[in-house]
Image 1 (tube, rainbow, N blue to C red):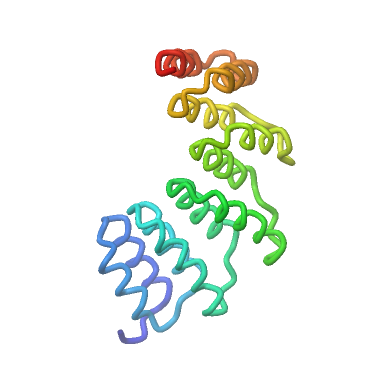
Image 2 (cartoon, rainbow, N blue to C red):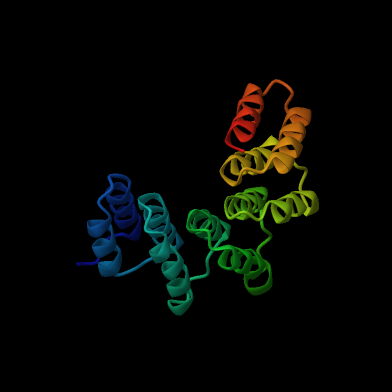
Length: 187
């Protein structure tokens, strides 16, 4: 690929990825003369959105090989992908690596992804413990993730607890009642 301005290349890469043409986006990414963090994050996002979650995780590892320092967005994209794979140990490792290896402070969204990952994977008490220990003020989002997972795991105890917390934080949320009813119906 001839030398093209990295900004223009990133725009094209993003357009192909958003259009769902992952194969062309990846070929373009591989052929770019110059890549920056935006290039890497565009590919990470494309893989996460396309459901190619293993490749998103592998691409984060490749960033290290190419001496590109991931940022908090890079980690957020891969944590999101990891959540859909149910790879709890990888998610915990990524969250820890942000601080220990890169000096990045995980944001609230990183914790929310991790709560979702733990809850989806059936680690409901661990998800609750993470919510309770977050260095951020909890909100209905984390508890809603836990409540949603309770339906699939048929856990009335955590479902009731999560619904109570959602409603205490956001009393006008009728969705919590619906989700709790579904938890009871499925158990």
